[in-house]
Length: 159
Image (cartoon, rainbow, N blue to C red):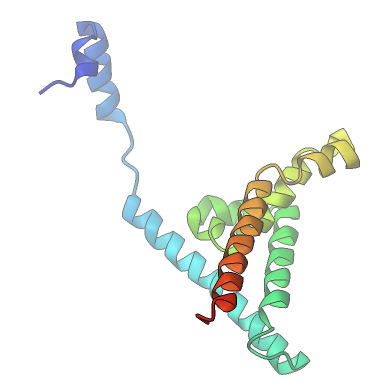
């Protein structure tokens, strides 16, 4: 049954539409999901190794090892983005490279690299947080709301 879109088309447009659909490449959704799963898992495994490194060599506890691990992973992703490697990882893995915290570092540094010709203040500084700014704002607001709820629960004696 033709859709509403094809009813309004001329016969020549409908022929073109069917020809286009016949030659359209099918996206390998399952293959892309598997690649994203493995690359995202590999990034998380590297993050876990970095955590163990900080615990073993710098005597961090499991409670406070998160901050240096996140900072190190963001630094690694920024370094790889600067050398052009992370772009290839992103092309291969898609969301598998964008969802972990390394995707945040990639988005910040790629905007900075893109606008470096406009100068350090207006180019790099002004455009660095275009994409990452909303992520930072949401994180700060969410932390505020959670802290407010916890404070109220403690004041009411629930916690």
